[in-house]
Amino acid sequence: MLDRNSLAEVLGLLAVVASLAFVALEIRQANQIAIGTTSYELGRNWMSINDLMITNADVGALVIALSDENFVPKDDLQSVQAHAFARRFLNMWVSAEEAYKTGIASEALYSAASMDVKAVVGNIPGVVRVFETVGEDYDLTKYRLLDPLVEAIERLPARNDAAR
Image (cartoon, rainbow, N blue to C red; front, side, top):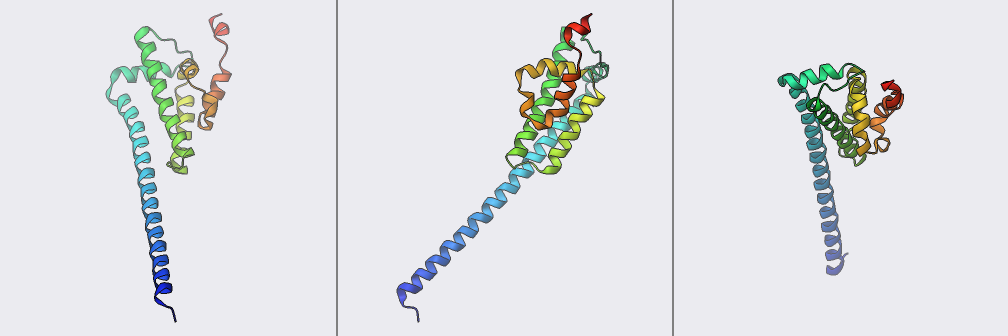
């Protein structure tokens, strides 16, 4: 039979195990909340871009202009808008990759972001030249998600060639 000291040790050990199990459960719940919150916020970023295109005629006109692979801004305002538009996408995609790398974004969300990069590059080809300029402020090669964008930039004719 167990004496009092042994019984106290067993009860203490059980209390420690129960405490560790509780902490593990709390950590798991916190991770699930972080993943859900991240997915929600990244989804809201996509929705806000779509909302801008739907509700703001200037942004809609910009997207139409950027659909031309030979896009040249008509004025300084359109140039600023195009650069802000590209930065918004880059910030969203970089956030998605960082969240995925740290485990707070799911494979499904990462896959959706990957498809988004391909869709923007494919459907709004004029923005690729804008990404080239904006990309000078980023290390685009650091993010696997941006590989299609980097490849599209690399396929662009040199600026001097385009001017000839």
